[in-house]
Length: 281
Image (cartoon, rainbow, N blue to C red; front, side, top):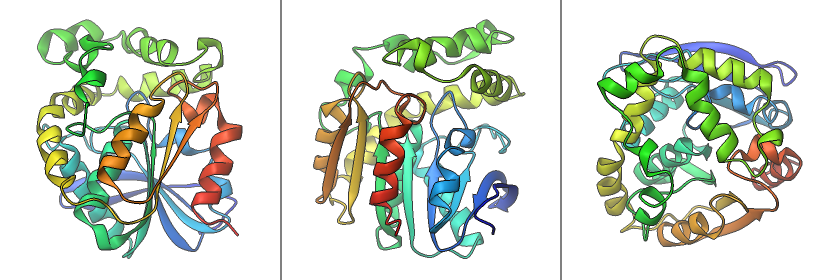
């Protein structure tokens, strides 16, 4: 794969059609996006990372151009999807990076396939079931974590952009320097596809099961190097503290001046950190 081009590809894994972006050559790294975004969020990082690695950025189950089945949105299950993709591509040992929901999938991947993950980076959100996680889940923006089912789907149909503006604006340090207008249009269109909003809501519905799964995973701490990047105006010390409960080798970095959308709000700080951690020569 050329390092100056990003290819858009599809793979069939365990009956699920997954879309992914691919670039570069070398040891593989998996980039896992979060909610209100898709694999598209990684495009600014991919060309730099592809200079030294094979980069695979999938659309998770239910998101973007990937299939949107009825179930399977527990993060351990979503991690198994990505592991099946990695296996289908011939990758044994990988590095994994995840933002938001993607960091939950990344952690579930590393916890289930410990010997196959060389290093892992988690970017701004939280780990269900770990430490004082309910202070994040219940106290701030309680409504959207429980906003799923028939009525919420009816309310957001045709109004996806309005719904996501809450995330892009209110979770940013400065709404004027958050997700770009072009990307907002791209994501709103992606989530307006049939089944996409329902799938996104199912990711939240699964948090209770995720908490049980992660509490079990956490009983055996991860040993591979872990980088945690958080927004000063978002997760802050919270995710770093959680990470230290589930892993032995944690480097925590609070990204100054940034909210939740690290790749969009603080790219100049985040990309060099990721490149250094992932071993760019």
